Image (cartoon, rainbow, N blue to C red; front, side):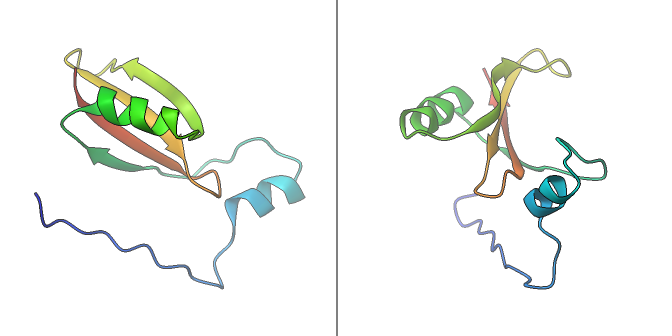
Length: 88
């Protein structure tokens, strides 16, 4: 899909994950879902992001669900998970 777009909009009234974790002196929370993108060359994208100093929750790994796939989980500026998955 070459014309695919996603728009992320900040809701000033929403709860911030990092603030909740810090307030409650926690390291993780339940009920959080990640946004997943399927891409063609997951390894190349991972290496490009790594070279730019991106932060990862999970480094490039083989999928346990589909052995032909690899994935990684990128952390955004608020430590939300963005997963990228694609063929090896």
